[in-house]
Image (cartoon, rainbow, N blue to C red):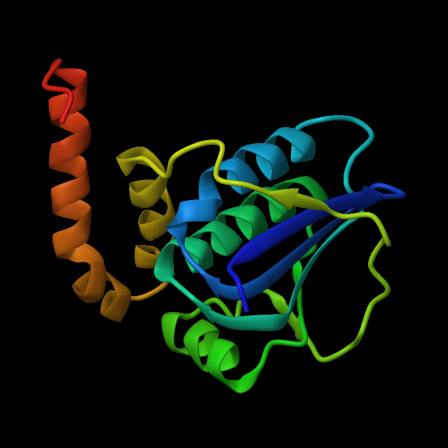
Length: 167
């Protein structure tokens, strides 16, 4: 199954579907689109993330889910809903601490028939990766240990870009 993310909106509800092996490569555009919509009126009533066809997700995608949840909680005081995750995804979300933040459900919610495939129009840059992993680091000391080296490398990379180093 190929890696893909799909996005739809209907009746002020956002629907995200992840398929295949979801990695940072597709996260930049999804983050921009979802955060932009959450900031608009009318407010979003619900955010559903269907993982029924997701075979694996990397830490960047999980950090993005935490970011969506944080933003949506601020606006609605409700968590996002993660639907129909398989055992692999449930274990990943539990191990990293995401499962306790979101509404995990095995319910099959009807998604809109028309869903836009989110491509890799935007590259996952160091800032996106750092933000996603900072979201995960906030969840536990164990995550801090897991991702501290990555955080350091990404922070250095961002500092070099600000200083005009480019790489």
